[in-house]
Length: 170
Image (cartoon, rainbow, N blue to C red):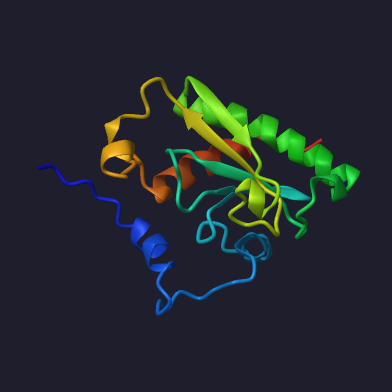
């Protein structure tokens, strides 16, 4: 039997136990937006109103989220400037993912509200997931296991350097 190593998933699994010692924040997006420690918080690009962050528990390699800096959960409550930069960074994010990972497609989506599946219902965010033909196999179905082929550190290095090359906010 082969072993699949994904040690970064331990924090996620531990977060479900009541006696874990992980500090709970009201909003990790807000914590990341306020911090200068971009690599620690997995922020790959920060604009004036919106930023791009890696998903700490990715579904696929290159799974990123685009979110306003301001704590806001309603899409229709974004300012004109926030909405424009959000769309601009969604567009640029697809370009960066295509350059770095050359996926066959990209899923873009937002879950608006807890009932719609939002994991962080208080802070609006869009997911971008690179997809490849055949990227789903029997492991998620049989073993409830997903293989992520790259560490978050490697992903952060690749994406943050590419964003610096491509993103010039208008």
